[in-house]
Image (cartoon, rainbow, N blue to C red; front, side, top):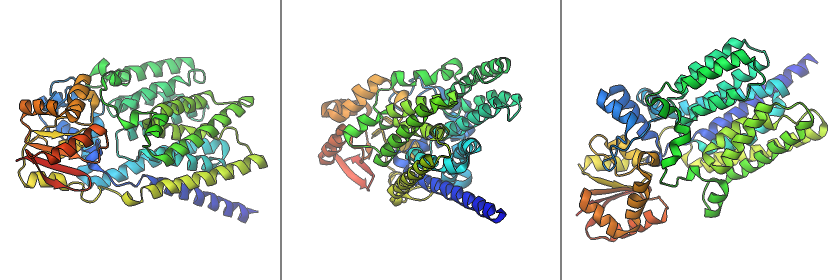
Length: 477
């Protein structure tokens, strides 16, 4: 019997190791710097650490990198992420950033798995991990939001453990300290208040009230004070450009764009989690866990950028119904096989970009621009803004970049998009800014971008001097 138990424990450890390895492989996607925000974040960190007081203040409060709307007010709510990214990139390069992202994600998953497995066993948890991996891995780009997943896991863990009296009530007072860091890393800090607040009926009212008050006060400890604390509620008030990650699943499916594997996995995980929660109402249900799954599920349906949040929180919520009956064990095995299929599918989806660090050749366009001493002002599109900031600032500033909230809504629509659609408007802008070069990510499939590029490559005033599979550079003849 002891040998059987020993072999079974080894089998369980091997299974969970394989599952975590699959998760790591699903996140091992080379960085596509021309379309990523990462370059700008790294430049933020460089200026915060090495820039003068004036530059540091400007980068936190204004649209610092633009020559078109330089003084437009902008709350840099993720400045500390930039510092972290810059330090890691300097120490270990972009490969180090990839490793950091994967490690933070593994720790986050590990916390959710630990909470779930302690209640229901690792055997019942594994199928839901496999179902969740394709949903979480749909956002494999190195972004500040990885810190939100990490802190959500810690807040969830501490609240769960304190409410079940497995750790001291004093752990609640760690949360305000974590919130001070979180509020400067990413706008997802608001979930710290949400997660803690859902345990108000399960925690001693005195300690809960003090901790919650301190967490709320902690959100004010950022360079923009109250305005910074309100960013999660105000950031979309001036969002004049439609971004894919902020769109709903039906909207993207109607356009025929998006990660189909992630969409199908999300739907399966949503249905199973919803059924599990509904069926478990006849048993004792964990209200906070159920609420997290429902809220993040709805948020993910409305905007795919929230997929990982639902993926993580669906693990403890989804498995709640299943016990040790033969029927439910059979269902779990089937779900595990489905999850394994989609997990392997999403790894295979990234096979051409599998690995760590940068995609080969992504810096060629910027190096060409610099080595040939090309000059601005540069007219560029949305996608490549962060890339240009990383490579060309301070020598050149950008016309527009992938922070719609940093530009007025009117500029985004009536100037940026309109100038791509209307040659006459572009001509007027050219007369105003005297563009010397056009630097585009030409896989921007918006109709206005494609129309503009077709016209400009045929325009005798402009000459194409560089083009690869992603970027194109034109200069005035």
